[in-house]
Image: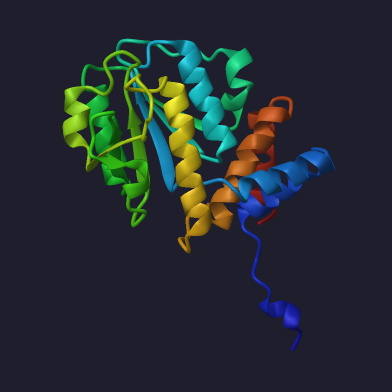
Length: 235
């Protein structure tokens, strides 16, 4: 009996990605494979009413740089618009989820994160625990508030833990975008040293790479739809 009879059939997404890889350059393929392999959803970031768009844009850039795939923006009072010169196009590569259509946007966001299995960790300069004390026993959602007032009381009360970044000077807090970068750097290093399964699965990486392909190919969404239609017609 031929050993090829036992080879697993390729999934639809595998075939879709192969079709896209026939279109895009080899350098893009290598870059997508390398970056997707380092992406994570074990950590996510939620920002509440960050009023300065350049700070929010810097946070998006930090999420991309540290391989964090999802960012949640709670913005019932401040509509976010990316500043391209600061985010450097990072909005194309990470998934930004917005909660801006009702007065209970913050509650809906933290509820969704909790239901998805995240531990809610609020940042506060007055917390007793530091970022080094956060347990990595389950996925973590890092919650950040406005530059001036911090996280709202409602969100703070929903948090599972409150932590601070150790500081050694006269000022009591960092700029919010700096705080996010420090937190993500610390958490990323801790995950790298752990034995946790914190990276995306092969299926998640494949789906992500398909999404990235649609964003650089002309009329990418339409192209993906046509590829899937072609594949299904052959099935």
